[in-house]
Image 1 (tube, rainbow, N blue to C red):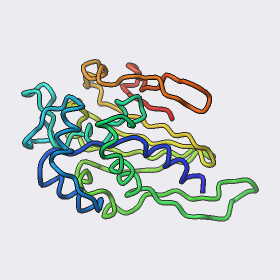
Image 2: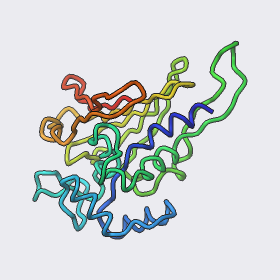
Image 3: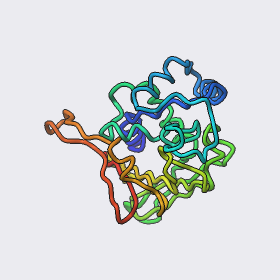
Image 4: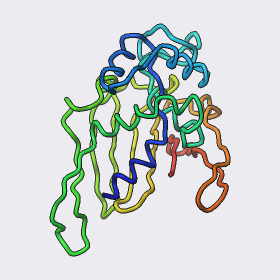
Length: 229
């Protein structure tokens, strides 16, 4: 199905290593591969994230320059790499973001209510299926459907952060039977996004239609950072 093509585009984005031995071991077991400390340190170093020894998820980036283990930069940080996540160290743990979305997205073939209508019903898997490393930070996950446009809304608890800035929501959107997708980080009103925006960079990427400048976009009015693929 075309949804699989959507995922093949999205999973180019690399999700990042969690700091903290216990959390890394949890993901290693869940993903079925080895997340060694060397790779974790390499990802942190490449992103300019100092190696942490743990700490509360309420810790901010300005607090000793540390980013806590539960910070969402270790899940959505691939967006900083021109929305591609294909360059080291972003590509080291590309499987994590895919595992995260796969853990809550569910589809079921249905009979269209009208000719040419939607033939797949999209829903959210039970909380028990969600990726354990971040499950405690998620308040709810909802899906909305508007015609052939599908959006999954990941709603975070109040203590969720991205590079220490309060994060409210993550949206993953796509249109059925197309290969594109959109990812959006929605920050809290009090988030200082200009402080972290320089971490997101653009670069020229060879696309089927030629070299294209790829990268995230920042909307001050809506407090969002978005990637369109």
